[in-house]
Amino acid sequence: MNNELLTNIKNAIKKTVPQKRIGVAFSGGVDSTLISKVLSDLDYDVTLLTIGFSESHDILFAKEVNEKLKFSHHVLEIEPDTFGKISSEINQKIKTENLSWNENCIAFYYVSKLAQSLDIDTVVTANGIDELFCGYNAYRDVFSEGESKILELMDSKLENELLMMKAVNLISSEFGVKIIQPLLSTEFIEFAKTIPITEKILDSEDLLRKHAIRRLAKDVQVPEISYNKRKKALQYGTKIHRKLLKTR
Image (tube, rainbow, N blue to C red):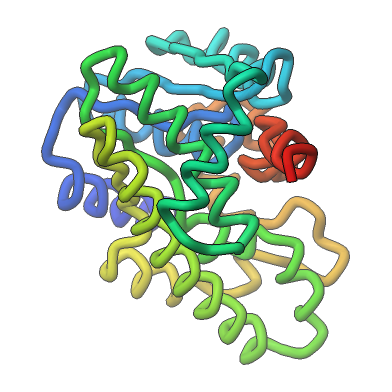
């Protein structure tokens, strides 16, 4: 299973990421660390990009994980003084009250700003793993209702993610930056859906989930602190969620 999964991830990257010098949106979690490691193994020139408020989880954890990876790594700390104005402008541009969409667009605004400052015009993300490998707690909530319900939730999550990343790219384009999600490509989605649910989530009490991804991460020498780490969503790890609620 691991070899087939790795081959399909590599193929998805090769087909969607033509540029060799790229940034990776990096939190230190298993998803972003795995894709960073695979990109590096494919001889891409990888620069890790981490954003968040000062002393946020993502900044601290990303630095800790990269002490072992030793990749080029840049961090942008969000300025509290301008955050309210920027988040308001982003909300007006994407025209949705969906909190998660707003939070992700804000996060990628800062990722794109950091990329532009480094003359990087392509940023790769690991979006798609949580949707396809049952990374969200919502999968635990529907587990007892059976596989058909899990797959129904998966399709709903994928549809939302694909639409949200269009909004993200609308924001990133202001910086001349393109955000690419290889693992949301049609071919990879089709492959990932053939992997048994039991390789992704064990039961309604499974707090870790994404087991196939974690095993692969271990195989390609992702640091253990990363592949054994429980999920912390981007908007929470960066403190964007907390700060955005305060501005409303």
